[in-house]
Length: 389
Image 1 (cartoon, one colour):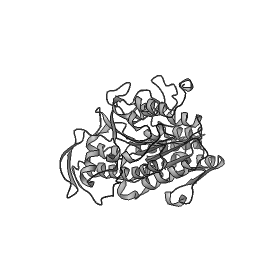
Image 2: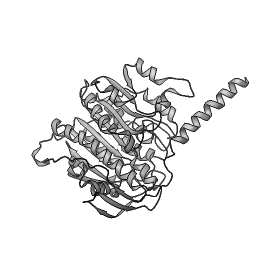
Image 3: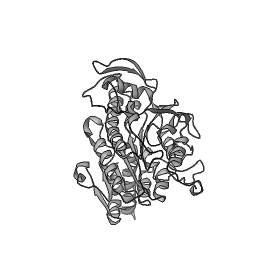
Image 4: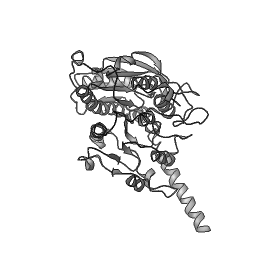
């Protein structure tokens, strides 16, 4: 009995340590200046010459976690321009949650994924803890392929809010377990330990194999995979920051689009998260914020190129909230440098931008609640109103 108790305490300690490690990016660094290391090329798109369909068959949604207007403009300043600037239809999303004027990523993500405002910390559930059906799940129901890509652990709040249903965002093992209750076609991100080193003893990687998934641990090792079910767990916890993870996000976005487009389906839904823009905001670190914005913008090019060729794809870029109260106080585009300021190490309540490109993009002009992003996607996919839960 003593040995069993010791083992249980050890497992609980490990689980608690994993949860704490998921939040260790919030220490203030206070680095207000940044000079770009390497500029990336931006697409030159003649939008008016492209004849997109009125309604999308596919939607690719980018969420720059913590990305407000200042974060975007910092990227524009140091790189000269961004692929986001090629997206001609622009709106603003109001980000408040059901119980707080300042949302967290769980409630913010759930509002976007499921069209309902909920309490901070909630993953895919409403204010009463009842399960909400997400745009990813509606897509599955309607014969579409689905995917998630993230530079954080795939079990972290934003990606989790599209696929999981848990009362607390810190329930990482339970969130990983929720992946097994879906037929998601592709997911790429960190968090391998929540699938394998679990308190309940389950090995979800073995279960994924049994369900027909090709499981990898590095985006390069699955380079030849172009169809079928794919799960790539790119880190034991979170992925490294942009300086150390290389082209992981761009390659993952391209691979997810390829596999989903090759699926025998009625189109696809893909969410791509630039997670660590938020982390740079928490740290008040201009280099971290801006470098992560640029990294997501490079990945965005893959989606825009696909949409141009496909003509039936809608590409969206938005945020769940702003982080840091960031301002751009000065800059030199010729030198690729920027000087910033921050008012907080936490999230703020300001509106965040919504950029839209492709089939149905004009629907996203204006100022609206974050829940409207879900409603607009649902409407454009022509899912029947009677099918809503």
